[in-house]
Image (cartoon, rainbow, N blue to C red; front, side):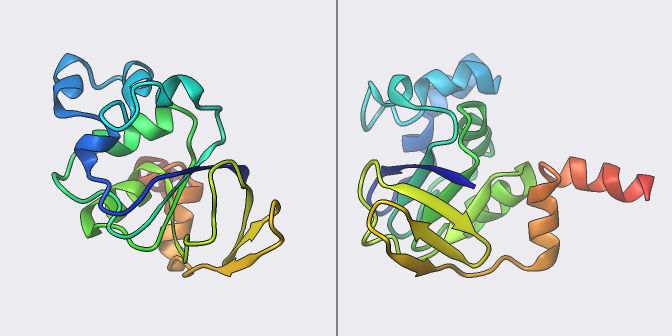
Length: 159
């Protein structure tokens, strides 16, 4: 997976990702994609390119357990979030919906860096740095690769 880094700091809560008031309007990912991170940067959603990678510090996805905070990112074409740590609920919501959560040291990654997620490491194509990443357990990786828990279960029923 390759993309440009879109960098945030620590303690990015689910209401920063997409506010609760937006989910009351609609839970359609195509609607929500226009409002991701609007509380932090009202222009952010318009600047996204499908394939961009969200990069954050510690405790990404803290706050309420809104699953829509994952589906909004997926609707915007984001397929992975790299962070020093994730809230437990956000991590599971990400896996269950097919968003790859990558736990790694994000301190050296800057806005716009070209990143390549390659198994258990992140290659920063801009700086040449190689950052080890915590591997996902095989079952979680299978779920993400299937596009989420529903896709995974469908695959298992067919085999």
